[in-house]
Image 1 (cartoon, rainbow, N blue to C red):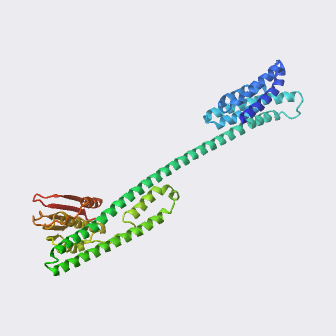
Image 2 (image 1 turned 30 degrees about the vertical axis):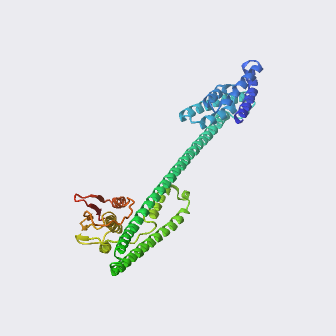
Image 3 (image 1 turned 90 degrees about the vertical axis):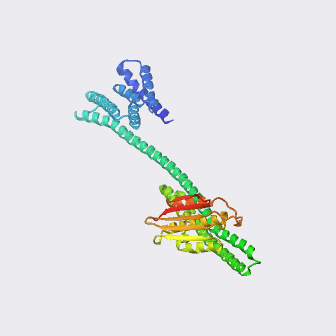
Length: 416
């Protein structure tokens, strides 16, 4: 609607200016009016072909037509993404043409006596009118065009930033989901290590209690006391673990109350860090077990009727908590497997403190033919859990049957 209105006004202006042009050129008035209407209507295509509009305005300048078309055409040309040299050339042509026409017109008016001003006014008027009709629309068009391009660039950057934030949010959600999966795996592994060993010993002691209940009441009482101790220890460890899990869940709920959008560009890093803090150890460190308790662990298996030989090489020293816990759990799970699958077999537990690593090995001989089976269920996750623990610390885990018919579990964990 704006272009149609401007084209209409320009056509009327050029038509009105065509009347004196027809008189000066010696042509019919209607021809001058029609020429003015056609020339002024060219402004309708100023957005699509601004160069053509300016060229038409320059062409009809000698006829003293198209002042509005020239101003609007220069503005439209400067707004478009046209090379600056083209804008400058056309603006200079328009200014020069306007200056010449104005100079001639003012000089003629002074010659006819219509203007009684000095000769200095002729060049002054020509320069002032030419600059006034060309410079302002060009400068305004350049400013508006630059501002439009800046706004478009800012919108594109905002769109890119929004897409980047959306991508970061999706990655943060993926990392959070991965952390939750890792947390579930760790919980399952820790629950398996805590419960399986204690319950296995309880089942072994219960079987022994059933066998000697009538023949040896004193031994039955001792086995019953051991079963009670094992149960209390298992309950204590489960309560501690559940307490850590509960506190970790509360911390995660507090962290979840912060909107993801509030963290801005740092969303991915913050979500990953929160996942590690909350998922890695369930909100806080897990107490024990330690390698110093390895003798007690072996003693419990020996009390259950297993013949266990413990040997330690190298000078004992303290390690990082996760290293000691992993080493302890490997020995614990290996002894649990002996109770499950090779009850009554002699077992050798070897621990070696080296310069930059700690090594452990649990090997059992073939079970005797007379050994009674406790019929303990097995989920097949013990060896997998041990390997995951050791691999998480950069260690090496190997397990498999021996040539003698037994089974061997070996692991090496870096000390640092």
